[in-house]
Length: 343
Image 1 (cartoon, helix red, strand yellow):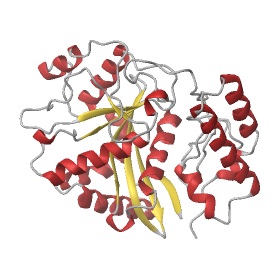
Image 2 (cartoon, rainbow, N blue to C red):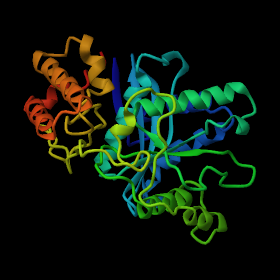
Image 3 (cartoon, rainbow, N blue to C red):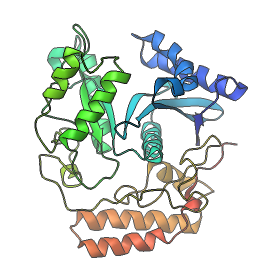
Image 4 (tube, rainbow, N blue to C red):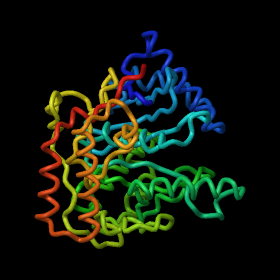
């Protein structure tokens, strides 16, 4: 059973423990840059001086941190950036990675982000030293494709930021927005990433070159390569063909007890999962509750209705019919879907 926490204080006993366990997972998951783990407490403590928001999200299982994510929110452009995400080796599998990414999405939505960006190693064998590294890159991209997170195309960002640096793909998660990403939005988001993540000022030649390489408008996302689903039909901007308007996201959380004021993932582990986010499929957190004693009959009906909505959309149901299903599902109390407390 998982419980999610946003770490706000690193000087308290719970905060120190959670940070230390997240650092251990970081060093285990990213052995080539173990020194980066030392910056986590500073990021959490000094974000006001940084000029952007930082959230350390941890997933606890049986009293220990099983995974973590570091999320940035850049207010100057209105986009979020997933800096790192990892799970501990002993806790791999069982949907932990998907549940953790669901938490990242909820955190970005709470900020009011217009979208979420992240970087992964490319699935290009020529830029990897070993077959293992290449297969790991493919596995990671397959994971994100299943979550409808796809690479941005038509830019030079896949080239190293610095000479001799790593090659990377920039991935985009629209967080359920209806329209494709525009060139101006990508430029503003990329400028924030280059300034805050890589410390490249706007006058830096590489910074300028990256932004100038963005010419296509709207931005086109790469079609899925590893997931044999109709993902392209569900995402705006894939292959340049925006799909029908089947996505819906409220401007603020409307669930009972939240009303847009509380964080979807709070320091106490409360999870708010509004059905209006996404296309109506139950999240990994909700699926994990299917065998839990805390799943009541109303929650059962909510999952069934969300699944029905996704099926109707996939079958090409009329928008009005899909909206009718969504309204009926939304009538069920969302608070019943909260994450059960860890014993």
